[in-house]
Amino acid sequence: MFQRFRRAVLPAAIVTASLGLAACTPGGFSTPDDPVFAPGVDYSADAVDGVEVGHRLLAAGEYELAIRSFNRAALDRGEIDTEILSGLGTANLGLGRLSQAETLLRRAAGRDDAQPSDLNNLGVVLMEAGKGAEAEQFFRRAFALDNGESAAIRDNLRLALANSENSATNYPQANNNDYALVRRGRSEFTIRPAP
Image (cartoon, rainbow, N blue to C red; front, side, top):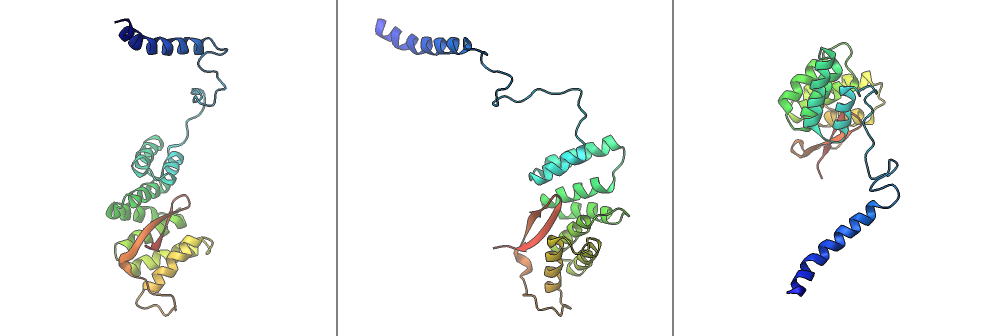
């Protein structure tokens, strides 16, 4: 009988004693400079802009959370500006929602302050939707607006030209059914043939 009692109580007593001794060490269970614990919240600091959070979430591949963040930013700003439209369109593109992405990116690309990445991403959506001629035009506009500095936009334009029926270039033909979207930079996508 004593043996059973000892087997049941002894491990519990050892764990209790260990925890008690750990609490007696200098600093207790944790110290403020302990790297294991997260820092406290600074309530006096300014909040990070929702658009910036949305771009960070896009970079992390968290498209649903990015959509929420961009929507929250639109509420905070009181308007849906070009950057928010572009972010929402890019997040929908990442989720494979081509119709929603096309609508949002067309609205962003139609504004005066549209960026080359907006035109590029719209071109990617159109290319995926089988609208190669229109995609080529948006890639050309993005390339011109960017002054040819972005390798992703340049590669997309080359691929669109290679797939165009009227193209006189010597680029190798690619199979339209084997495309995959690859994340590039902060909010640009490029089309690459799938391996």
